Image (cartoon, rainbow, N blue to C red):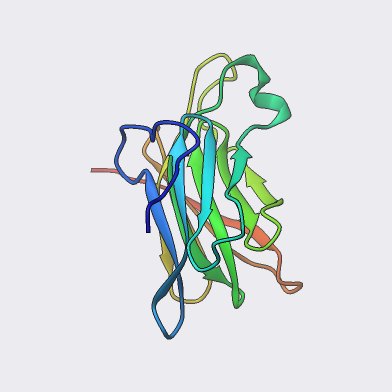
Length: 157
């Protein structure tokens, strides 16, 4: 299948993520980074058009948002699109692609630029994300199933 992109994909590592259906391991959709946007392209249905998701927040209006990494994973038995970038961590609902959770992951003063990069999904519904200050944050699910911040770790050599 030929994929039609809305714009040129960003020339960075981890600029593409494939959402796989378990257990068949068939690609359901592909997400591609385009600067501060993500293009989600459906793979299984021909008649469905791709969706273009802007990644921004009210606090990020001072500068253009940029996306560093995307990842599809299952949290609390639901597929979600996890995004790391200049606005921090963002988690989008799989079906409607609406923002469900956001965390700035900021460890520098407000006047300095920061970004989150380095996503990992661990067993037990945990998401880890690093940032440009060398901090790794751990997020997990609360009793109601929503995501919450759990811990912050800094490497000391």
